[in-house]
Amino acid sequence: MLEAIRKRSGGIVVKVLLVFLVMSFGAWGVGDYIRGGVGGNSVASVGDVDISPQAFSNEMQREMQRLRGLLGDQLDADMARQIGLPDQVLSRMVRSALYLSAANEQGIIIDDAQVTAQIQSISAFKGVTGQFDKDAFRMAIGNAGYSEQSFIRLVRDDLKRSALINSFDGGAVGSQYIADLIHAYRGETRSVEFAVIPDARFTDVLAPDNAAIAAYHNDNQNQFMAPEYRSLSYIFITASDFAQVSDVTEEDILEAYEMRKAEFISQGSRQILQAIYSDEATAIKAVDMISKGRDFAETAGEIAGASAESLDLGWVTRDDMLGEALADAVFSTSAGSVSQPAQSMLGWHVFKVLDVKEKAVSSLGDVRGDLAEDIALSKAVDTLYEQANALEDELGSGATLEEASLALGLTLKHIEGVDKGGLDHTGVMTRDLPDEALIAQAFSTEEGTESPLIESKGNAYYIVRVDGVDAPALRPLDTVRDAVSEAILKDMRQEQAKKSTQQVVENMNGASTLAATVFSTVGEGIAINVAANFKRNGAGIPANMPKELAALMFEKKTGEAGMVRGADGYVVAHMRSIAKADTANSMETVNQIKVELAEGMRSDIFEQIARALEQRMSVTVNRNVLNQAF
Image: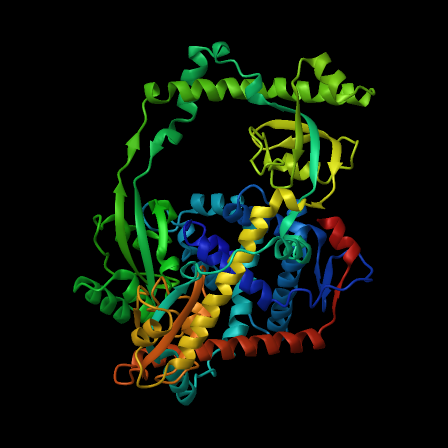
């Protein structure tokens, strides 16, 4: 939690931190400690340290609040249980308690000066002057659910654990020999020619006769099944049904504008790409390469091993950036330009600014209409709740949907035959579905019964009744004859494409060219592509070359060929050359690999320490108390 507060001011980097969160759950050994049958009032006991229900509940609430910032408000208690979040949080707390107990046993003491220095170093607690600000400190820890005393205790315990862990942190060194081997493996490149041989090229297939169509229809019934269809009746009410803009006064609009003025200030934003490098020298090297005409993504892929998808951060504001240094780097760079390197806890960042939006303020006239609609909608929410309660009362007294809708002046709608995807019998999407969850609810409700009255997103309620069910059935042959015939032709064309591509592979040898072999086997009109110097990690692979084919070519020798199935045909490749890793300029890359090896060794050491502590200290969990606490 302390680490989360340190990063509180960062917004965009939570996309990356979420990955670390999931990985940390794995490292904490989820489920290793979760056992039942333990008595007492504690959620768990670690040696002589108890984890109280209140402490566990507080940590769960903080974790859920943090995850909602990443996943949105859809994360509720039920979803948290479904993804195993309580066990994950408890497992993390148990592991933390193990380290703390060990630190206490070793007599590790953290004095007040160390605690003060640590707290004052956290950027979230600094004011506009850049110095520690007590008001900012109190606000931040209060928002995180801590008192001043409990947060100081958290920091002190965190420093104790760090001191214990750091004492084991110095002996892990990556092997030069293994790093060289890994570099040689990762850095090797392939250059190939490849061609796509599409199924559609093979048009000389004979149309199937009636017997073949009937047999295919019978043997491949799963391709021609009609899904289950359900006929529904439903009532859907939303606050907008009762909203009246005419009821909104000028005073209402003025008051809302003043209260929400901050919403109408559009912060300056930048559309950016981000690459993170291990050290400043590497980042400077990357900036220099880009300034000389190298592509930003290609540079990041070559030096940092980053994929093009991971570089795109989209539109960001200053508040989204991880610290002032990164924000200054981005917002001092013009559109189309690349920033100078800036450092964060994640490494050295280089940004490319693709586009710029400057700060803007919307006037009352600009937003008057939207404000009036929002106010009317807000006033209508009370009416919505009253109508929902009245509907439940009507149904509870025995009224049917028809009777309840008539009594309350609500609209009862019907859908005749819809599948789980919302399609009707003709395959057309059912129009004006009010909520996609309504269909899902209908398919979990028994025939002839009604669902409960369910609250929907956007201030709405619905109730659905299943009037009839048509079970899945094989579509009659006369209704799908054309589809069956086309499926047979498609299979035949695919088989011909496969045989021809296999023939190309068999005909290839060290002295042949792919173009000549494809021409003699398939004919003219097949484009020959070149993929030069691509790596195992995908760097350099052309967009039209399947990754499976690239991986296959790393199993081939020069002059050999291979093939894989593509989206619309088969793709064949011929190995032109193999290049070993560049050892002349590899010191920086090899050193980074040594760092990765050392980190892996440290992780293994910490895991072994935790396992040993678990065996030596009694760790018990009370499942009943755990379930009651959350």
